[in-house]
Length: 244
Image 1 (cartoon, rainbow, N blue to C red):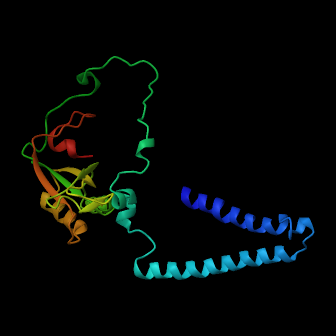
Image 2: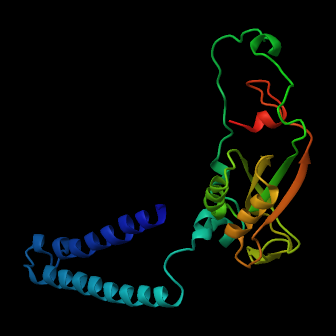
Image 3: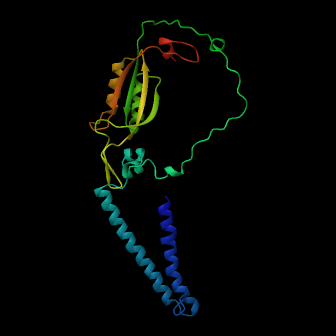
């Protein structure tokens, strides 16, 4: 917002004052030098004419832009960021970002063996249960729809990570400062879901339903076998570790 603020303060406000001050302080025709109101009136008329002309031109120009291209960026462009899509950089202010510092207070207590903190049991009511991890990589803008779809099929847990990547298309072909880039890493989200009771096919079908657009960049789904699951808080393993 620094550019609009600077333009209003410097060009608009100071421009108006500069024009009116000539009608006040002009040594030959200015009001304060005995020149009367005529020259000041001419300056005021000039200001009104400029404002009227600029307003008409802006209305016409913005109407044409809205009709031909659109005044707003798309939802995807706003989420990814115009710095990335227009200029090929993560942020125009990246050089101002400071590394975070973590401050701790107090003294650390001695570690307690897990066996003393909670009962550890490997018994399970479903020893034959199978576990699968479904990894979904897709656009960031699709996360809310994907999360809602998973909730509808009773998927109660997921791990979400912001990642960068590209497929066989090497990302969308872009130019950075006039130079075409062969490979572009695009911001994506990676959603990891481990399921046992919920069928894997149901998870895949629900994900495909909300992610599919028919365009490059819809994403990919990977399925892995999981050997075991351990809930740290209770010590439960296997099927029980996935139950809330």
